[in-house]
Amino acid sequence: MDVIFVHGALVREGAWWWRVTADLLQKRTGVLSRAVALPSCGEGDPDEAAGGLVADAEALRRELDRLGAAIVVCHSYGGTVLAEAGSHPSVSNLLYISSYLPEVGQSQGAIMSGEQNPVTVDEVSAGLIGIAGYDAVSFGARFLQDGDRSTQEEAWRRVTPQRVEAFATPTSQAGWKNIDSTYLICGDDRSTSLELQRFHAARATRFAEIPTGHHPFLTRPDLVVAQLETILAKNAA
Image 1 (cartoon, rainbow, N blue to C red):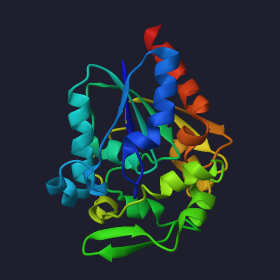
Image 2: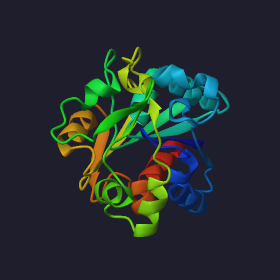
Image 3: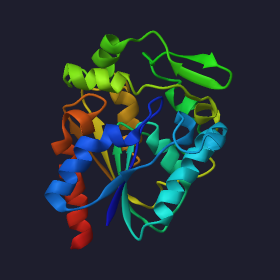
């Protein structure tokens, strides 16, 4: 059994975001993991970037093609990537962290459109959008308020523009359906509202709430790994 991590929107270097959880998971269980490089965030093949959501979903499918069985962990936009990737025989379980389980036809932009206090994004150049109005301090206060200053600064350095197609493209599949899934609601999340999290959590097989901000895999990796250990134990039974 392997674990695949899919990071959220408007950031790069997925392996950095998941590293603390990945290291703890391997230490406790021996299970190896990898983070998907999302073309729309400027990772991987630059020729694929304009494909937006579709290219990101294909990148996830390529990772899954290499594996026999995997748990896919989706953060934020990563859940929309999983949905668009569709059904894949290697996926045994899903773990969502402050994420989305969209129905067919929903875009990431549409999912976020009802938020009362949305993260502001603007076009930074043709075809690219980015977080607007933030610096390292304000970013840390909203997205990583439960993390230390060093982690906040390192995270800010990995914020990046992303192809607008990642937000504008409606999903053509709902890859989360008929897959055993657990949803972690981040109770102190200042980025994604509790209302939106709970709406999508209700579509999962089960859910639990944890007392963290938007990135528990950086600030409370023990809570994320505990959920993965539960999933692994169920698969081993």
